[in-house]
Image (cartoon, rainbow, N blue to C red; front, side, top):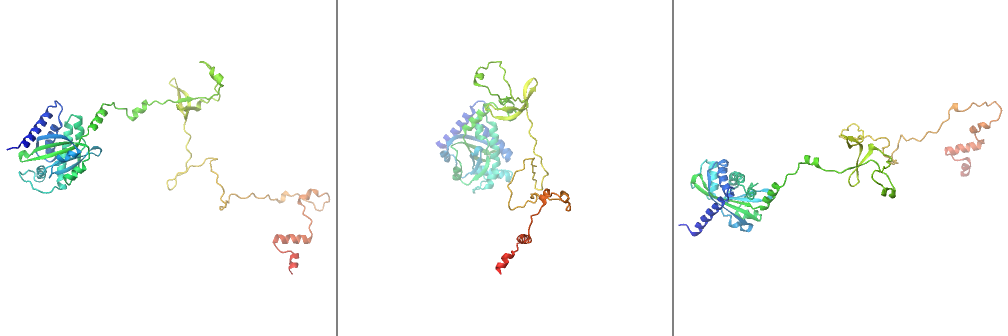
Length: 387
């Protein structure tokens, strides 16, 4: 005979299902999970599963302990923006999935009490990865779509305590699905724990309602840029400036239409241009860039050097330790034989004009002294004193 607690639990499930069915044309998340589980189990593992009971609840983080049962296979689900969810399966579901994948059929009552392993998680994960995307495509409410979007299996939690420690979101939505397996041969329980993120749904709705902006290539076509063309600069006395009236003529001094300045609204020059017309309207053409410096051949290491122009060679101070063989002292002018005029030694006359070539009149002793000094020899007087 069923107890009052069991009757209350069954009654709560029926009321929850009835509430979800009364949502009109919009498909509830529980109904989407029921349909998605049946299709995902058939396509992912080839197993017939149907949901015979489904409930959902919103729980705070400190209340999750009451929603997670012991002796389950705990799967961690990675979601968007680092969010973590979880999926818990009882032993009946895990055993039925393993039997279907290994033996091709489910054996009634063939459950063995053993510890769950990573292999169990890897064989069950395809069902969860196929379930959530299918359910997301079936729901209509933005909150439900956000709740089911972007989750997939990432790891197995060793225990219930480890699972609760890994979940850090403030609030979660808990879905309990009771499934009939292989036409009634087994009955199992699947619990989905997913973060409740209403703010993400609100941001998505605002983004969808906001008008889409132009792409970058189209936005550049509507960008407004105010530029002024300055064709000349003049100075006027303040009195003349104050007395100016419409129609007065201004004298333009040094007008150069081929070097019109293009300035921003801040008065900063950005380019030089040539003033002209285009299709009957005033227009400017930016001056061409200066030619690039001439390059020499590429070196063995891929180095390209620029040839310095005339007057661009940097001046470096001379290094006293380096001898520059090109910088030679200017050669002293030498007199050639033809530079001298022929002198007639037998002719008599005034020889003052030859004073440039005259030698000083020296005695024999003076000549010997000069030669000794040039050769670095001691003079005769010093030799005599030393003797």
